[in-house]
Length: 45
Image (cartoon, rainbow, N blue to C red; front, side):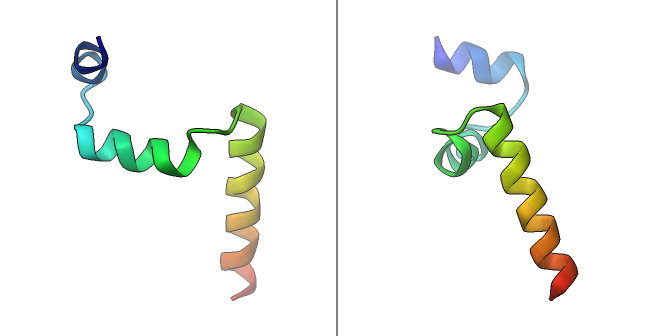
């Protein structure tokens, strides 16, 4: 099932697993906030 999903959205398994390790336990609001904070950090640096 997972392989069919990955093929249907055209993403490699390593890319999926990297994304899942980074964002897997977050809901959409958490991911949005994480990206905002990351953007703010890059702006400050």
